[in-house]
Amino acid sequence: MNKYITYINNFKNYKYLLLLLTRSHISKKYRGSFLGILWSLLNPLFQMIVLTLIFSTLFKNHIDNFPLYMITARLIYEFFSMGTNGAMKSIVDSSSLIKKVYIPKYLITISKVLADFIIFLISLIDLLIVMLITGADFTINLIYVPLYLFLLFVFTTGISLILSTITVFFRDIEHLYGIFIMILMYFSAIFYPANIIPQRFQFVLQANPIYQFITGFRQVIYYGQPIELMNLLYCFIAGAISIVIGLVVFERNQHKFILHV
Amino acid sequence: MEELAIKLDNVTMTYRITQEKIDSFKEFFVKSLKGKIKYKEFNAVNSLSLEVKKGERLGIIGHNGAGKSTLLKLISGVMKPTSGKLTINGTISPLLELGAGFDPDLTGAKNIYLNGAILGRNKGFLEEKFKEIVDYADLGEFIDVPVKNYSSGMRARLGFAVATQIDPDILILDEILGVGDQNFRDKSTAKMKEMINSGKTVLLVSHSLDQIQELTENVVWLHNGEIREYGESSVVCKSYRDYMSSLKYMQSRTLS
Image (cartoon, rainbow over all chains, first blue to last red; front, top):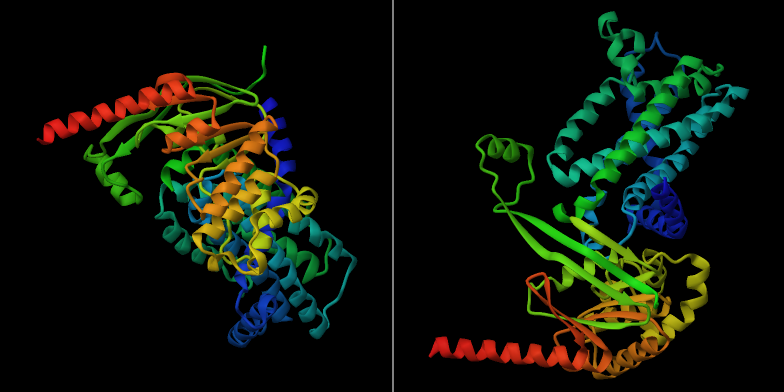
């Protein structure tokens, strides 16, 4: 128990470091580019336009307001993919730092996820733009958006902690994960209607946490409906399991990092 | 009884040395199936017990590979001992390398905040100390230039300024006072003395025995991860000198 009190006290001391690290990740990402952080707005918009041009004719009769249908999912997937991909290398990349000074190592991974999360929040402006342009309804159910965002952040942080730990010991995971994340994209019903997946494969879709987050998100933004309890419960449990396993795995192994990076 | 700043109780640090570095699944599986992964165990620090009182200035000497740096890394919390117990009372400013944790793309001024935060300080504290640090580092207009354009001496000056001005209870210095120009060396030595007089605990690793004798009261002589001798600076430094010259004598005899 005492151990955890020490952890919490320690975190208070290093809050400022978390802020600085997060800020430097964000500014590094856009350093040297003329449009800077504007890219986090432009990128999803361009992607959406391209994908809309390609897919909307294909699913014309199945999905109305394809741009909004797509961008709600695309933004969530993009954050998860960017966040975990960037964070998994975080410990390995900061080897020179952790070899020389003591800092709580989870800060390195979490600051990376946090930076991507902030960029993701900025890119949500795109969502607003698309909603306005396509004349989508703004319903009261939008108040559930922050709840899903929070759960998604917790879920992504947990997965990132697990991945950054594994990466220290086995670098191959980087490449394996690249393949996995691509498969995940095709199984998240981002640019196709979920019901085109055959019945016998539906369970893959249902078991995919990212698909569940997307469903919840779409429910309140795209359909403008109240949340479904089962879906929220699923997201909550996924987030809780992920963060607990992430913290435990990371905590158990962090003292070995320095011997392997 | 005087309060202890650092207490090591039977501390051992074991490195597992693989003959080759293995960092892919394939290599690991293939080699472990063949039983080909061979580890050699090596105790960089071997059941070492040591107590450092508050306000004590302790020098650490020993030949290369004696375990000095490992010992400092254990004390500063960079590494966790394989076995044994280690207790630290107070905040530590570890200077294992000056300017560790600098972000080369940020300016000197921003790096003061970053480095201070790495050492566990908050914004308010650093804002208060900022001017002192800048004055002490004495980098002129270079304070607003990215650190990647600094010379190694300038980096060292900034690193030293941050680490000493943030007011740690325990200061760890690993062979860093040899850097910088004469002016900075005098200044850093003066600062060290000032910190020593204000009752800080200081651990100093150096190959310069003169410096050790000048700045510390007690010295630990490490030899193959164990304490070979512990005692007053002048006494231990003398026996270390005798040992080194006897080594030289032996070498010159075998050569001829």
